[in-house]
Amino acid sequence: MEEEKKTVSEEKAGAPKAIDTPTTAQFESELKRLRYRHNFIKSLWSTVSSLIVVAAIAVIISTMILPVLRVTGTSMNPTLKNDEVLLCNKLADIERGDIVAFYYNNKVLIKRVIGLPGDVIDIAEDGTVYVNGEMLDEPYVSALAFGEADQEFPVQVQESRYFLCGDNRPISIDSRSTTIGCIAEENIIGVVFFRVLPFDSIGSM
Image (cartoon, rainbow, N blue to C red; front, side, top):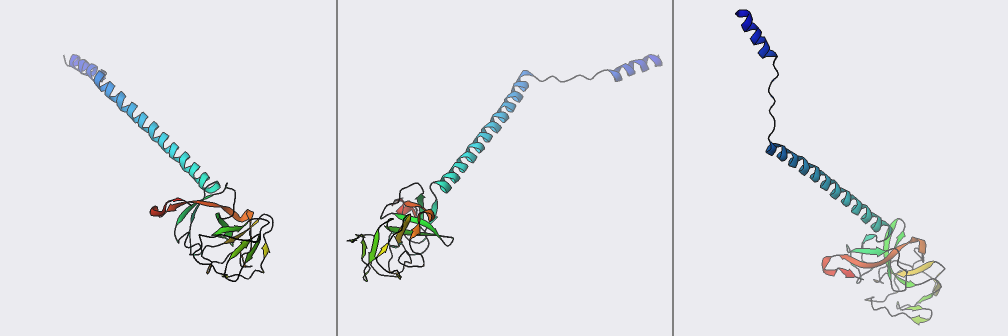
């Protein structure tokens, strides 16, 4: 009898345990959870990828086509004021009267185009500017002044160069000074065309 009990006990000990089979509802719930997780990860990756692409495009555009510039100083008053943020178009053709940004001694300066290649520039003692013998109409200048000018006028603008002046003529140091002179086309970043900040002045130039 004891041997029989022992045998039965051993058989029970070696018998496989019953496996809990999930119900259909549990299976469907787990399937939905996995699908949701998969779709969420897919959507998140798609969003991140899109943001990376947009950021890359924005960097390329801002570097290669539309650089963002900040005004420093008052040499372009009253047209531009200190700390204003501007957009510059590197692809635009440069014309007389345009405001351009250019590199000078590892700095970015902003001035107005007065003379194009081949133009003859003359400036009277009262600051009146003559281009090719004709007086230049300058409504953007609040006060004419000879300013920091040590050039021997008249000056003929060389090929691929531009004669630039700040709108604040009394204090602006520009092409009137031999220190800066006419600016080479290769040093010009582009034409300023849009004011981004401040918001109350936002708009095209």
